[in-house]
Length: 265
Length: 283
Image (tube, rainbow over all chains, first blue to last red; front, top):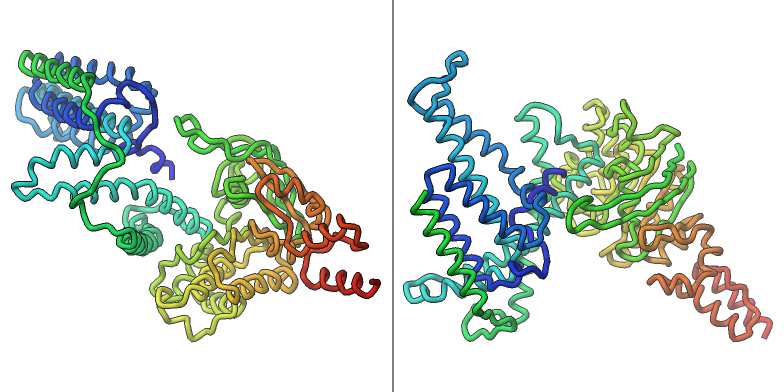
């Protein structure tokens, strides 16, 4: 259960900060630019500057730094794995040998770079969802995808699927906790035993979870039908997205920084 | 096996932006063989409180003693605590997972280390207690009716033979017949099986009929405690915190206010009927 509480990816922290108030499209585009930056830079200075950019945005968003960093925890395993693979699988000058494992200088550098990239990637994208409510986020995606409808991209359907998926993450997390507690009350143990034992102990959680997910999907479909849902055709909006001068300024600033840092470092 | 909680406080998401205090300094003792009704509005902290009784939640501060033993002290097996204090969650049928009813009901006792040879007896006993036909044992729980599913889920807890049973809104979402069946099962468990019962509910009618003692919660604190007569005398206060008194009690209270000679300390239909018949005879 502790695991569940640490997932900050996809979570939204309501706020009134300048970052919260930006148009979701601005934030989505800025996030993409930032991700592009991470793949352009090839020096530690570059990553440090990227991290600095993020840090400033986190400060502006007034979300506690500790809370943002918590998003890394669930992905710790992947991070450590990446680090190890690069450390020991890269050919080059050997600087340390433990039994058959050879740590090379090139591996050390590449591993650290990949991990910096990964961590910044996680923080950068979780910052988007932390400061943008899921509804605004999907509105933004739908609006950005609209021009591609001509070539057959189902913009509205994709956005609706995302809205529903995001909407149900907290519900499913809550449901999982409830089912876990109920099975723990019957003496289930999810924490001890070997990996096979633990995998098997998940069955009493997964089956009820799937059953209830299907039931919810069914109920939701009926509820949507009952309220006359017929796709995005001719839909008017209650919340109209507004791209203001502030958004333009923010986007130009981020783009400028990305170009500067991306091509210089 | 008395349960005692002392100065219990619990905060959800402690240290996060969505921090929320659910329980504040709760102290309560539940004696052996008691039937306690725990009532409160949604969000009053009643479900959070009972999840401490078998160690599913660890208090932010405060202690929980079962049989005088602090359950979060070193060397206490939470599994054995959960065997002693059984817990039926709200909508327990949503936790069914077994391929057969037997497998699902046997899950608890199996985890408690009951030998395979004994499992069959345990399952039969539990199913008989909740009033389900033993022929259902080999059926899939997912093809049963809603009421039957709930009974299977309750049987799954009873099969562990807990001395204390906590039921969180056990009648929620059931039809009147299913409701009566579950409530009479709870009464049977208390009177015949001599189990300690903690019934969490916001239905005054349900708890008034069965409980010997009521504990009323609001905003994470215990605000009223006592026999149903004592608690229901505070009708105005109960309404202020989003609860109420049973309709029949309300009727007597209104009659009394209007000057009729009735005793308003009754809360079951039968007792109120008697009181009104008595009143009519004097008129």
